[in-house]
Length: 157
Image: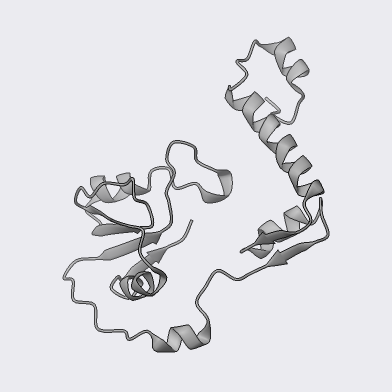
């Protein structure tokens, strides 16, 4: 089924609830386009997202989402002390409404079911610690940077 169709065409094939997946996806894309076209400026952290947004608005700016060289030099990296594989995810893994460009569906299950070490989640105050998942909630920037150095693998959505 082509979700780029209008709701009228979708209804001809099947009756959809207003919040059903095809209608919601179509509506979200339409709202996104309308908002981006009217925005004075758009700031994003990724070049790929910026390229997509430039089709609607020429005032798109990329602000890199990584530490500056000065900040990186301040971070002291000690040898990792854990005896097991340790991974870290920084962000809010919203499992209830996964977004195509940030889909982390199944991430925690990989660690729960496969004995591949621990996963530390930074930045989500709603996630609960339940080994092998460790949730630290929101951390101030410097604490987060220090925590990132304590793990073997850093995961990005």
